[in-house]
Amino acid sequence: MGKPAARDGRLIAQHGYAVLQVAYFDAPGLPKDLALIPLEYFKTAIDWLRARPDVDPDRIGIVGGSIGGEVALSVASHYPEIRAIVAAMPSGVVWPGIIHSPGEPPSTFTLAGKPLPYLPYGMPFSTVYNLYAKGLLALGQHKNAIIPVERINGPVMLICGKSDTLWPSCPMSEQVVARLKAKNFRYSVKLLEYPDAGHGVFGKPFDPNSAGFAALPKEGGSAKGNNAARRDSWARAMAFLDAALKP
Image 1 (spheres, rainbow, N blue to C red):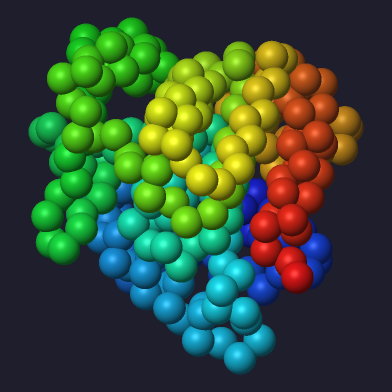
Image 2: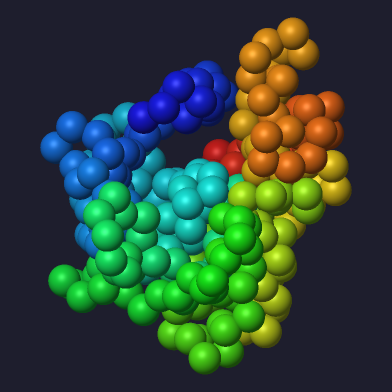
């Protein structure tokens, strides 16, 4: 796992949780490409965690950001063992994977050996953001790509920056909320949107003198706006998990 994910995982552990970080591509023993990742792989991780004597098997949550947010919503939609979800900068649809070879990428995920339906990228495109934003315009013709979030077995928190320049995380988060409301979702749903934050909206805040702080505007929003959003969203996410998972 990358250093930011490892740092955030340690913070969650320090908050009183047993934490399992799951790499699913581009790591030793795993596929190089982010494509055709079996959802059963995450089920194996869930089962391993639930079998540990120091873990309450009925109090398992999942936290993910960016494509990890797409992972979190997809996994929780298929496995009711997950009882609380924090999805930051997420997608409410399955997208094509990201591959290093020429050709059209397949779905990001598989289930029971079959690729999950996905929403094609919008072509032609001028920016990565445009690739996703144009794709969303065709969602009406690819409704089977929508993640069935109404199946989730616990409360959901969504976090996004309205100035995200990597992909339209707030519009996609709002789509998730709208679907949950339309499906009469029985658990609580919280959406945190930050106007002056981008794709760096979630995670441990940075020291203002650090290189990490200076890099925050790279994917939308200002450095101060992103850092303020990180400070607020992190505290609220931990409180959310505590309310959902702690006795």
